[in-house]
Length: 321
Image (cartoon, rainbow, N blue to C red; front, side, top):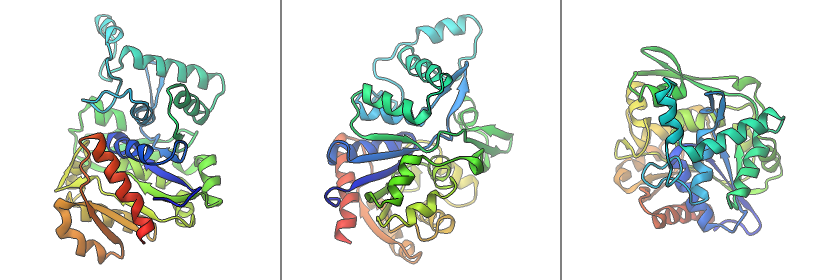
């Protein structure tokens, strides 16, 4: 599927990204997959450093994710949260008892001077993950959602406000001064990746923070590896998360075509392939007019076999091309 000896880089954020990442990990050889993960969602809560997208990915790859919710841990209990509620504490962000261990240890290690990248690699190894999980940066970048109710940190918009405020735009505090993940940048410069996959994650709050890191989009263009983007919109809907709602409120229209146009307008020359669901096959010709190769496949990942099949399809694009 990919060139012998060549690794694969995936860009991911949220549940949709973690699903395809799992399919890619299943399909590739152990250690062949590198995942560059959005950290714009990171925030401090109850004095703890929370990295939602990293944890969702690591829990998914380790087989520990809550299958029904897609995030958190399977078999979780909530005693600490219940006790916090009795004390009148802040409980809008749901932290399970076992999940708390992750945040406690991450916060402790970072306070001792360990980088987020090193902690994440250690966490993944301890949980039996053979793929390489890389935070997009070790610096602080925080996604801010501009809404009709003012500027909201992402988790306040997403969790506390349940995505109800109308979206007006996005910004990423700290991004201009942030250094992209050093290991990934070095590998890109050495053309170590045979393929690059942008998972079906929210383009605005999961992928844009990664691509807008200084030098990142250009490094991906120059990496001599084909870039395949999988649309997170299927039949006018986001299968998980608020992407479709955001697109409608931004006046873009919630379509796979609008997603393709977003990537073409903001990152010209980045995409080699754009993968859309069979439901959206009628949009293929309009997307091709943007100068992008279009591939049509079943992209709804309900089962592990679905994830593996979409991973194989996406990886095969480069070989076929």
